[in-house]
Structure formats: C-alpha cells, structure tokens
Amino acid sequence: MIDFLKSVLGKEAPGSKNLAKERLRLVLVHDRATVSPHLLESLKEDLIRVISNYMEIDEKTLDVQLNREDDSVALVANIPIIKMKRTYQDAKA
Amino acid sequence: MEPVILKGNREGVVVHLDCNLDFNELCARIEAKIKAADTFLGNKTEVIINSGSVAFNFGQAQQLRDLLDSLGLGIKKFIPEVNNQEEVLKDIPVPQVVIDDTRFLAQGPALIIRKNLRSGQSIFHDGTIIILGDVNPGAEVIATGHILVIGNLRGIAHAGAKGDTRAVVFASRLQPTQLRIANFITRAPDEEVLVPLEPEIARIKDEMVVIEKYMQK
Amino acid sequence: MGEVVVITSGKGGVGKTTTTANIGTGLAALGKRVVLIDTDIGLRNLDVVMGLENRIVYDLVDVTQGHCRLKQALIKDKRFDGLFLLPAAQTKDKTAVTAEDMKKLCCTLKEEFDFVLVDCPAGIEQGFKNAIAGAEKALIVTTPEVSAVRDADRIIGLLEANNLPGPKLIINRIRPDMVKRGDMMNIEDMIDILAIDLIGVVPEDEYIVVSTNKGEPAVLDMDSRAGQAYRNIAKRLTGAEVPLINLDYEEGIVNKLKRLLGFKG
Image (cartoon, rainbow over all chains, first blue to last red; front, side, top):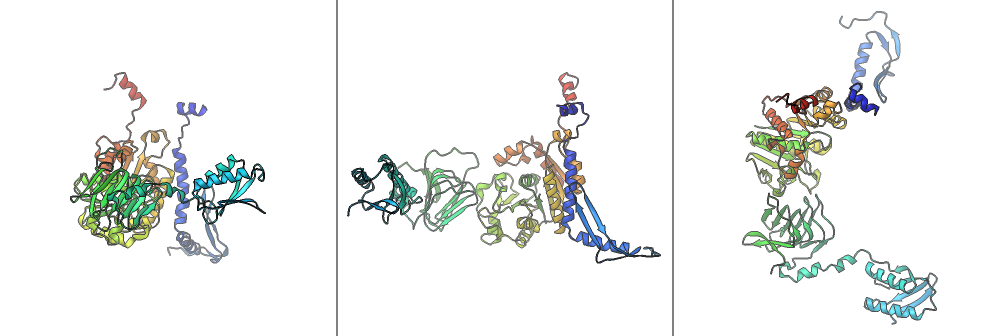
C-alpha cells in the first residue's frame, strides 16, 4: 500500500529497469573478463613494464587477479618489491 | 492328460494348465476342478498358475484373476510370466481388414508402428508401413509400398518411394503437409481446409494424385 | 554481388526467426532478390513462419550432401517472385552440415541474390558457427531483458573473435508503456551497455502471433506496428536513412482527458 502511494505521489518510483541495468553491468564485467583469458596475462606484462621503471620487483611471484564478489569486481595485484630504484628513468627519456 | 491339475509344493498350491485347450474351455475346467477341491483348498489361498510353455497375455491373466477371485482364491504368480507387450496387436483387426481389399495388396513385409510420430521423426521401410497412431507435422513416413495410418496423418507421407505408382496412402484423417506417391507430389492447399471426417485414401489415377473417401465403392 | 547477413542472438525465443522472415519479406517487397536460409537443423521453423512448410521437398542437408541441386531446394515464396527459402532439415543428423559447406553455399547464393539472410539457431555451438561461417554482416536480436542482453553481449564478443565485426543491433519486443514506467530498460540503456550500432527497434505487437498463425509475415500488414518497424529495418539494410519510429504512442492521461473534454482535436 505504501509502495502504491509512493508511486502515485511519484516520490520514489525507481521501477525495475535501473536494477536490471545495474545487474547487467556487473554480470557483463564478469562475462567479459572470463571471455578473454589472455587479458590478465597481457595486463600483467604491461604492469611489469611500467612498475619496473620505478622499482625492482619479483616477477615470478607477482600475482594479478580479478576478485569477484556479489556486488563488485576488483583487480587485485600482489607485487613483491625487491628494491626501490634510487633514480627512476623517465619513460619518455 | 488332465487339462487342470492341482499340486502342492513348497511354494504352495500350483495349478498346472494344459494350454492346448481353448481358453474359455480351460476356464470352465478350472472352475469345476476348484469347486471339486473346495475342502482341500482353504479360503483366500494364493495359488501359482503354471501354464507350461505358453504365456498368458494381459487380458487372459486378468480373466483368470477374476475367475479365481470369484472362487475365493487369489493368484500368487504366473509361470511363465504374463506377457504384457504383445496382446494389443492381436486384438487389432486393421491388418486383416485391409488385406481383404485389393487396393492394399501387400508389397513385401509390413512394418507396424504403434506410437505417434512427432516432428523430426522419420520412418523408412522397404515395404508397407502401418502406423497405429498419429503422424504429426514435421514427421515423415517413407515406404516403398503402401502407407496406412490409423490415426491423423498431418506430416509428410511418401508411398511407393522407389517409383511404384500402385502404392496408396490411407489415413483415418488424411490431412498431410505433403503427400508423395512414387514421383508425384501434392501439398496441402494454402487456404484452410475442412478436417476430413472419414477415412480417405490417396493414389495415382491418370498421372495425378487423387484423394477419395475410403468407404465409397 | 549480394551480401550475406546472419541474424543471431545467443538466447532463444527473442525473435530471430520472426525477424529473419520479416526483414527478408520486407527486402523482397522493396524489389530485392532475397534468399532466407534456415540453419536450425532439427528444429526448423522459418518455413512455418513464412507459410511455406507444405512445399518442402529438399533441404539444406540435401544440398550440402549433394542429394539435389541447390536450385531444387530453393522454395519460391507465395507472395514475391524474388524471395526464396532454403529450409533446414528436420529429420536428419545435425552434424551433416559443416562451416565449410555454409561458406561455399553462401558464396554461391550471393552471386545470384542481393541478400542472403541466414537464420541462426540459438546457442553458441556448431549450429551457430555454421550460420556465421559464410556471413559478412551480422544482425543481433535482443529483447529488453537482462538475460537476452547478456547473451547478445557474448555473441558480439564471439563475432569479433570470428572476424565478423560491426554487428548491428535489433531491439525486439520493447513495450513503450513499461519503458515509461521505468520497468523496462530503454534503448539508450541497451546501446550504452552493448556499445554497438542500432539498426531498429521493434515494439511488442500482438499481431506477430496472428501473423505467425497465418504464415504471413507482419511486415506485409500496414496496420502492424512491428511490421512498420521491420519495413524500416529492411530499408536501412538497403542503405536508406530512416528515422526510428516514435514508440511513444501511448497518450498521456492529461491529453486523453483534454481530448475527451473537447480541448484538443
């Protein structure tokens, strides 16, 4: 009844479409991430290249993965640092 | 040999039957025998029916159960077991009826199918096909001989598939998507047509597929 | 030289076959020479939607296995001389057709036709691979539902991986009243998510059921709203620019009242 009143008064009428869109957005992040298994591999290579400009890292134990939870997907990288570089090379130099 | 013999063994009372006798006659003899042995058999005794090498069909078994029940007895089991499968076929007069008609002269052994053919199913037989059931749209029946459908024919039927123009297609309700006999093809008209109310038969007449009522002589 | 267009969706029941029949008929009505190929072996339906089921003698499998000539298997439409159907096999083994077969077939057909429309089966198995094998363009049918859009997204990815980029989207069975209420995703929502070009929006229309019952594609009915949408898609496929039809046909209650009260003609 309250819902009905709310919708009549036009105050809080979200409809289900926004819910649909949000669920779809999430599910597609999952789907697209699993569709391309190469994605993580190439992301890892890029990360190593960029980070190596600043610090020495342990490439062997470097771990990059997508963590999927119910309502979010997060990129989690665990990158052990061996040594900080005293001076960093400017990538453009 | 006595057609009905009562014997007792470890399992109980066994009724040995001689199945050379007509079934109804046999039933009468069983009744007489059991009535005579009334005092010997207790009430509600479950007996074993041994019919030697002949298996009773489902209908006969039921008749025997009813008979013994009326005599205050039960049946524990049948030796050999009752044949549940084949009885239907024996009672169906279709093959005999059609063989009387010269239009159904046999062309090789007939294949009898007792089920509905559904979309996507296809039957081929070198000879005549008899279907006791419906042929739905999307199903096809191909025979080098005749096709007889005791049911609705709504799918595709191809009789005389190797070119025999004498082949016919019979159906209780003949409303096929497409009908082929030998090298002739007809299809259902595009407009809606009335459902045929009586069996019809299709055959080749003067280089054309004609459909006529089966009953007209 | 014509073009080969596959109509696909991933999910079943979103209207691939209806779409194929209507766009094909629409193109034929514009004077194009069109052939429709049903690749859903074992579950053919395009013949019924087109009302041609009683004319089938040979089918796709007969053609690929050389049981008949291609010309013999093409069924001429009842309404248009330039419209043909190559039906799927219903009773044969579905592994009988290969992607290579389809490629060859599409190549041969596009020599003679302006449009070769391939109706794809649901799913992403061999049937899908066959259907897209000879295609140069793809139309993706979806409905405004989470499941259908998700599958459409998967299909778009697979098409890209199979060198069939730039598919166009058809949003089918949209209900303007529900969109208005906020209970159905709107066109922008879906385009936003799928990020592909739109080629048409087809409103939900009861007439589609009637037309399928009759075997007469809705595109031929001038009163059918879905038919109008399909006519527009057909025109867009020929390269014409046609604006989207206004789906907002439901009158607002205020306007309705005004009209009832005689304020507005």
